[in-house]
Length: 306
Image (cartoon, rainbow, N blue to C red):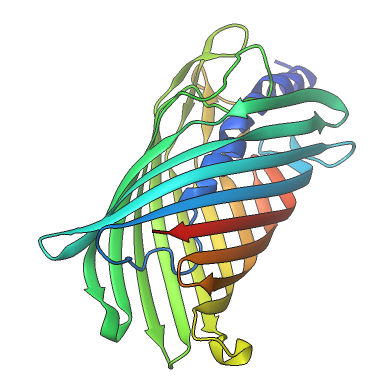
């Protein structure tokens, strides 16, 4: 296969594999936690969250053919509806979680080659989490959760972009949260994502497989209640996220796509009443390999406790 033919195949077929990464970013939007998310709430508490995520991209990297940044673009406008329920078992907190992403991918192109657009539902996610350590006085928490992605989202094997991945996916995540020096908190987390095959990939019904992805997250938060003169929780946070591995193959052949991303982010969150929290977060990819690089990301989240 000549380099030109390989590039065309990677661009037009491989880019659809990108969909899994992109709406992986859509469904993972809720899995990729914000500061304080792994501090348990009181037993028998329900939580409703609504998210809006905007992402703009103007550069695409393929590990075989290189980086395309000429007339290259992809926008995402993603919403997420999420419900969580907290309770206790054996004196340890647990949480049940349901995530439903939806939205649109628009203006997709690589080096001027049109990828089209996609809209509809993403793949829903069901999850359960458990706290092994819950020490509020010491501000110390250790938890683990399992997220199962169901292949029920909008998917068309004739399209280069899709919101659904047409495959099962499982994510095991461990988080440690620790408060220190009165006003500081650190959240660190790691996860392991494994993927089932998509056996209906592209017009030729090929099999897309993907190796496991490993991710690391860190947040450093500062309590600004005294600055705002409020008794309700309010924080500013700076964070890092990195994803590694996730090499994709089409019928056993590497196509130059993987999960390679490093990102910095900044978040401001505040409870405006004891039961309502608003959050805004911005982010930027400092590196990307085997996928689109995000120039700018915006996340808005509204949370209601009841």
